[in-house]
Image 1 (cartoon, one colour):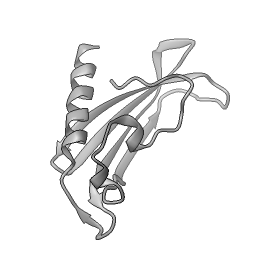
Image 2 (spheres, rainbow, N blue to C red):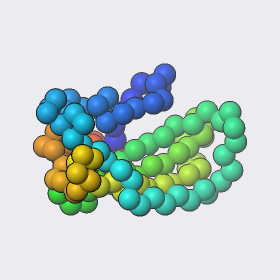
Image 3 (cartoon, helix red, strand yellow):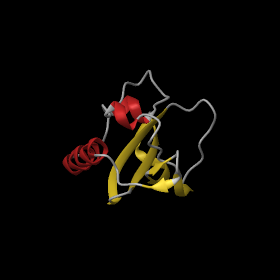
Image 4 (cartoon, rainbow, N blue to C red):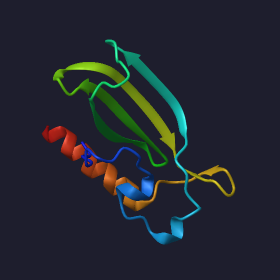
Length: 116
C-alpha cells in the first residue's frame, strides 16, 4: 500500500513518483471503469482512512482498489471501491504503454500490500 501524509488530500500522478520530464503533457490516466460499494453509512465530517492497493492490469492499464474505514474503528470497512485507468497520450488520444516509472511504482505498491 502506498502511504501518504495525513495532512495532504489532493495528489496528482507527479506527486507519487518521479516521471521523466519527456512525459509531461504526453501522458494521461483517465478512469475507464469504476465501481463502489457503500457497506455502512458514511457521514460528512467523519474522519476516515483510505487504503489503496495498486495493480498492473496489462501494459497500458492499472487498477486501484480502495478501502475506506473510520479512524475510530479501522477494522470496520465502510466503503470498497475500484477504479481502472488506461494510459493514453492526450495529444493524439491513443492508448500507450505505461512508462517504466509507473510500472515500477505499481510493483512497489503491490509488494507493500502483500506484506501488510
